[in-house]
Structure formats: C-alpha cells, structure tokens
Image (cartoon, rainbow, N blue to C red):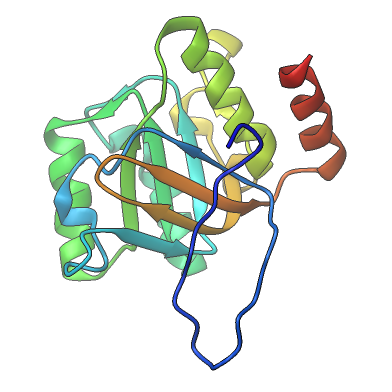
Length: 182
C-alpha cells in the first residue's frame, strides 16, 4: 500500500508473529546473479550489513580498497548502492564473493536525476549513512565505516531491494516521512 510493504516469511517455530518495522523497498535488484545467497529462490539476504550509498558509477575498486579492508575486518556483509557497478569493479566483487572472502551484493541506485538524489538521501536517512557524493566534497578514498549506512537486514531479488530496520535516527526518519507526505 501507500504506507508500506508487506513481506511474509516462513517461521522457524509453530507460532505466527506480526512484526511492524521501519524499512523501505525500491525497484532495483542485484546487478549480477552471482550475488545471490539463495540460488533456489534467486535472492540475496544480507544480515546486519554495512550499506555504501554512492551516487556515481563504480568501475574500479582501487579508491575504496581501504574501506573494503575495514569491512572485511568487521566480519559484516556490505551492500553497495551505486549508479552502476561494472568492469573490473564488478569482476573483483564477484570473485571475492564466490571465494567467500566478502559477503557482498551490489544494486543500482533507484530513480533518475533529481529523483535519484532524493531517493539516495531517503536511504541515507533510513540507514544512518551518508550519500557519497563528490558534489558535496566526499571522495570514495576518504570514506570510513562510520559514513556507511546500516540495517538489520537487506533482502535483494532480481527486481526489488528491501531494507529492513535501518539504523537511522528515528526522529530524522519521522521528519523525512512527514516531508514526503506533505
């Protein structure tokens, strides 16, 4: 509906539960099927991931190697949201994912133009991260873990991405929701 998304998950026990959580869904799926964690259902689930929100295209990982090292040391998965991930960057991420060195998935940023900027800002507010944008003087080389968004879970399918329980400030999220509804 207009106020949210409903997801149904199989329970591990005999009880039925209803959880109402903050989150968002957008109409972009994984960039490569190699990112899936469940081949049977063709979806990727990342638990407690860091989320890199980058407004440009990623063709080389060289600028973000220090950040990737920090993510690997943290032991947490990483979701990359970018205009696109291609070439050497995509190949390197896929190889690292397949070798098991890095739990990772990449999705294209939702929307276009000014709408994309607004949607990336929405994701940043929800997850408590920053939009990495050279327009505001943040280069990929200088990004640290505390600039990344976080969420309890990210669920990525071929066509959709759902971010569940972002780590953003509750008041900021409520303020942004009120702004959108106005």
